[in-house]
Length: 126
Image 1 (cartoon, helix red, strand yellow):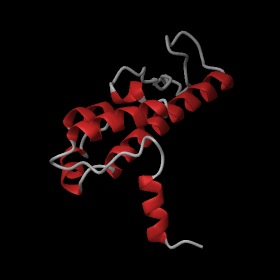
Image 2 (cartoon, one colour):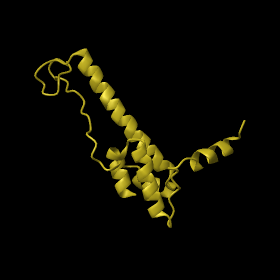
Image 3 (tube, one colour):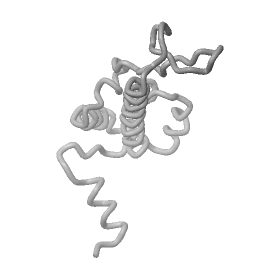
């Protein structure tokens, strides 16, 4: 069984898209490998901000019922579930991209960008 330190080194240095920790001298390598790694994971649209952000279904303030997007009728259970799945998938992909960026930047950079809620804004700030 390998030690935690050995496992960590293997994870961070393995694979064709291993992204180096950002330093003052490796911006080009960091940027190129970050773009490739996130694109390979299907997250490029999140990084560049072109992903369609799903909206929660509206709730009628009068009766508290969940409506379809145009508010013309009550949403079916299938519509509600599909909307929840869509929102969850979007949030998972955002979190994956943010997690990778935070793992590859110094804490001083993370502190400066952590107030952003979308990965595209974090990337732009970095």
